[in-house]
Image (cartoon, rainbow, N blue to C red; front, side):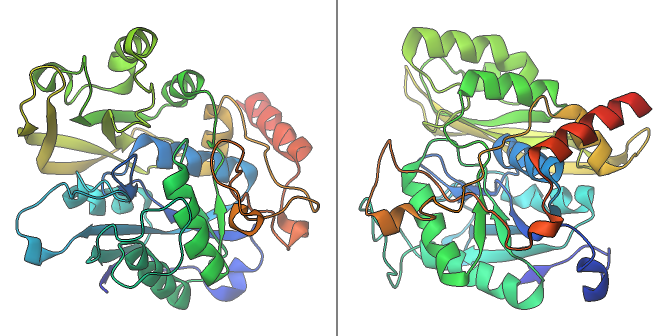
Length: 353
């Protein structure tokens, strides 16, 4: 298991103990709709969930990336139930833009255990996630994982399984939220993400690949209302790569790219954008990340579980519409802001501006 880090040194343990609960961030590079879960593309959902986490008061300490094994050749997209890997070549810039360490793992397994529930299974790709998070936990002070899942129970159940085994808590502030509202929030929150994969009726590779969320908003809403396309791509209709957001200290710029056609279907072609050359550029001004986030997020999710909630759907033996994901409630409550604290922080930030 490899790890690649940025030049920014990690804060000392003594310093960390004075900060809000620390969590490990899981970026979209392994995100799967039906395809992937930790996203190798640094997509919009994981980015927006990280913004929600920061707004609540958590601290991001690291990023993780799972990517195809070199033995599989020049493959950008794996046939996987858990991971979407398109764009993984550029994920190091995502980490540099956030000035955070990046840990890289290899997807060696396949989708072996595909039932509603998941138990530890040798050779399953979920175990690659377990090994990567296990490595990170040994090297970093982490208590939880930021997960941008919105709709996939398949992925949720597997993330919960891995986190439970490692005593980590998943944070899923976007879970089961209205996708049309979420998309509007992401755009208004200054998330600049582009479409890097299309796989749905009404989406044209030549026309839509490389377009921003704001450019695609009206099209996606129309396709949703006409044909049932998931506005946020939760059915695997499209994937994104984030170029900029309030969490970034630098902006990612795409210099050259090419369209790779995976399936030339007449009605729903599947194609993706291979990012060939990119670079980072300085942003005009950098202010406190917390202030930027609290100003940018239209709302802060407040779906923490209570003491009476059963923390894991697997323990309840449930799966499906009624199953709820684990939302972390830190045991170190003295560091966890309340909803009232968060609202006060937002208002205070706005007044200062």
